[in-house]
Image: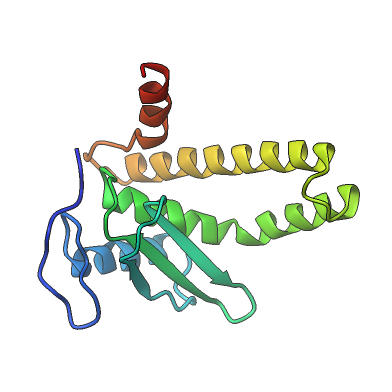
Length: 162
């Protein structure tokens, strides 16, 4: 199931998803409050260029500002899940950066170092799977009836069946 189709042009940008920009803002406001991120300024930016991600969040921890990036051509199945997922990255960002700094202190700055690359890859896989589990848990606890995304798993299945 895709969540992309033409929508009305908003005053700022064209949000080309199954939900309107106001729906994305509704999810953002709801979950920003639920996740205790109400003191953050978080605008939505629609990415119109070709982009491999469904969404992302760019963060300024000191200023408590972040930008929620949503791919106009996303193939996501559940926009609420996408919003919660990215907000959880924001919630965990301080810990994320601390681990990144620790990896640099232990293994150095050379990203081609095999030991550093291994530790970084393991950390990123653990971070992403933790964020995905928390996202699904929050949505389930909140009574969400929408199908959860299996995009990452589906890509592995498609690759194996090629």
